[in-house]
Image (cartoon, rainbow, N blue to C red; front, top):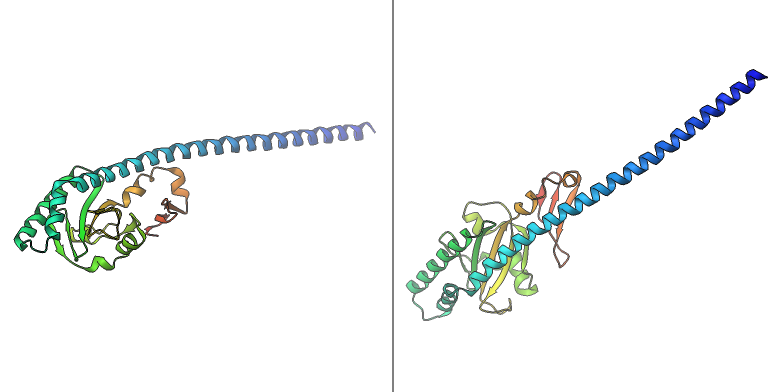
Length: 237
């Protein structure tokens, strides 16, 4: 009888020990998980704030450059000359050349901007790097149609003809601005400011959570996906 009582006490002690240890393990596990989750959330918010500041810097550079080009006398003189049906071809060419030189100098002052191009509805465009091109193909491009008809000022990741002619096949994100009018449907000249689309992703490469994510999508204020990054490749939306 004494032996049986001792076995019962031992069994009860072992059971209490196992239950206590199991309960303590569960509590410690939940507490640790809560601490780790809180750390990850705060770290992610901090990184997103840093990324937001970087995007604000990019956007500020784009707006500053666009403002300089838009308000420049060189741009206004060029728009006036090319819009004049009585202007001589030589005069128009000089205006094109001066504008291209101005765009080159302005672009070189902003490290984040890859190029600036001014398009005319007549089917020609002038870009930095002495690019003066007669080409109507852009009139059928999706970004041009969306800008003229839907007033969409930001272009998702795409390949730009001016960039390709300058031996740069990397995708770009662009901001559009009318010249000579505030209404896209009425303007005859359109400015297109390009920024490398990779700049939007490379800033995220140091984020631990970004490496584990299946995909990341940049959403514009209109709710459109401007750029999507998967774990294997980056694609336009």
